Length: 451
Image (cartoon, rainbow, N blue to C red; front, side, top):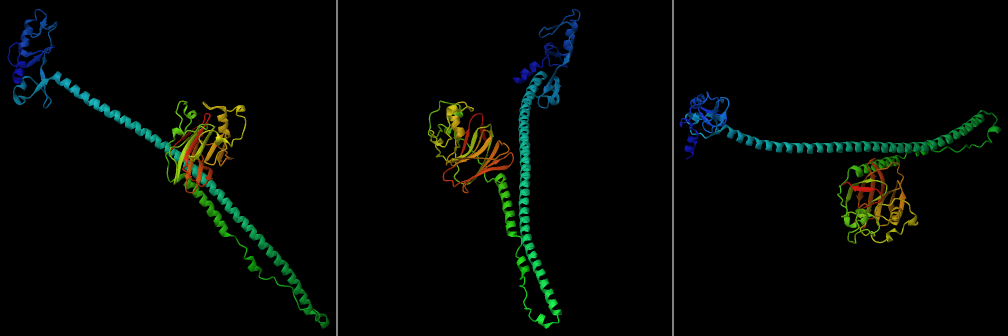
């Protein structure tokens, strides 16, 4: 049936036989070249030409185009006659337009896939570019930190060298003074002995027995073993070596604390401990964990052993960061009994959103407690807080990025200014409860845990 349909399509509508040298008009209908030529010759006198099939008119004699089909099996263009005889007989064929449309569809599919691959490649380029930038920034940061570290180490080594050399010079001076004193004593003794020798020589030269015999045969005491005594005075090399080794050990320990950290600790803050004033909310249900008066938040987890390190990025003037026991008071104002009492109504400082004047006054005059160890910045002054005492720090330069190092078993909590790779302060205590990260901010200050 399909073969019959195909044969019908290959018959010329003029001679009703299979196309011979097929020609196609502009309207798309095909005829034998001789047949259509004869028909067009008949219409030459009228000047109007038409298609014998559909009667489409042409004002000029239409150009005759060879009718071709594309062989889909090996993509060879052939004429209709060739599809019925020769090597291409029996092959499936389709018109050029059909083949063209199918080809365009396939090309569209290929183009869509190529676009997806291009987009994927572009995303990867963007990702790699971003990663490269991050690596470069990280490398620049590490280079700067190494440079600062080496400079700081050189300063410390130079100071240690000066200290050790001064110790050697002081000991040298002490030994020199004592030996000089012994030499002076010996010089006096030599002078006295020289006088005695001269006196005895005079007696030996006398001829009068009555002048010589009464003289006592005695002489002044000797000088003892002054050389042996002097050799006792020497440099105390063990003390000098101890000073040098202690200084070097301190420098090395500092390097280890800064750059040889045992564990980088990821710390998450517990929102349940935060008062509403830190979350810009007044509608949360009351929880026992929340700080009622103090705008503070604790970390979710606490540390009960090991060594841990993390960093905090700060900004603004008005923050307290450190560590605290979970048993720290959270309700009421009993935690603030150590305030330097002033009238909160007379306080004229900055009031944060949601914080009452008395609360801000309380934050800024808080003297610490016996369950936390913290570093504070307020009024552009740094201080440390513990055991109800605030101790001002002598800090010449401000810093924003702070490294915190905890050695639980050793009972040490240290703070470092990472911008300058310098030690700020170390608390020493015997920790008996889990230690949680504690952060407090007010005013326009902020604190962000980096890792």
